[in-house]
Image 1 (cartoon, helix red, strand yellow):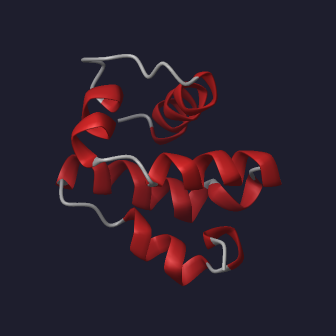
Image 2 (tube, rainbow, N blue to C red):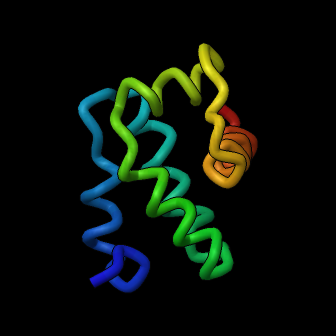
Image 3 (cartoon, rainbow, N blue to C red):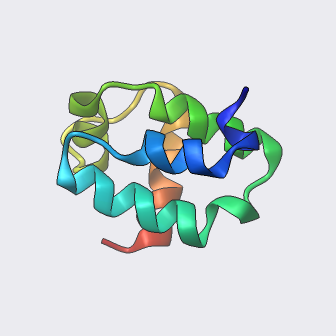
Length: 83
């Protein structure tokens, strides 16, 4: 079952090993996830499959994700959450 079909599983997948990622993902899922298109929900689900160190580097601006869709989602989350 896809995470897009199961919000409790999605919330669980957003709980990470780094607090910095939790404070980005959890508000985003609660406030913006339901407004995403199906394609963007799938991109977000792919983003959650990435390892925490890579996610941290992308969200903190230390590296740029080479995957254009994932990078666009990272930028969207950052603008939406406004951390």
